[in-house]
Length: 206
Image 1 (cartoon, rainbow, N blue to C red):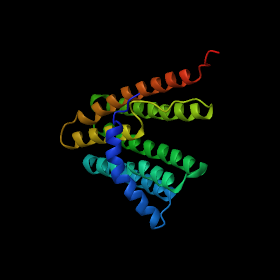
Image 2: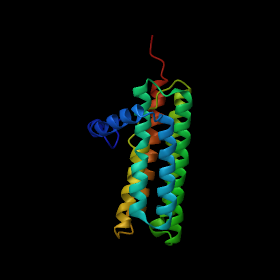
Image 3: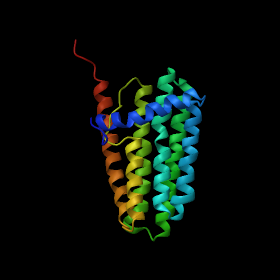
């Protein structure tokens, strides 16, 4: 099932990521180091800037460092695989970064008298985002296929970033609207993954 950012967009994106990944490997940077650095950058952007109401700066910093989620994976692929610990570290850092982003959003919106029920939308989007990741991981551990969905992690972070930029430009509704959209898309993605996993579990007729 199609993602928000299709194959063509991701192919263009790879023209930037691939050379960067090869350069970092050449100078001795490991994929795990990039994973940790990306998470630290997201925490910095979310907690130092976003939570304090500097939405444009926070959104730009978080988006930039969120792209390392694709960079470390590309580095591991080029190097011939990142190992099981690399995958565990990447998933763990993703959850920490997501928690920081949405925690910062909740903190900011609560201080703005919660316009358009943005706090509720942020909490809903956070929970559903965790379920999106859990369904895929649990399905894989059971030998099922749930690698589908309209809004994966990159799409989710970019949507929040776009909402932050809109609100930072003076349109108060931007961030809450992005959060409600994200919550809806995350719910759809959970359903897509469950359906796909169920179909992959069907026993073919003899």
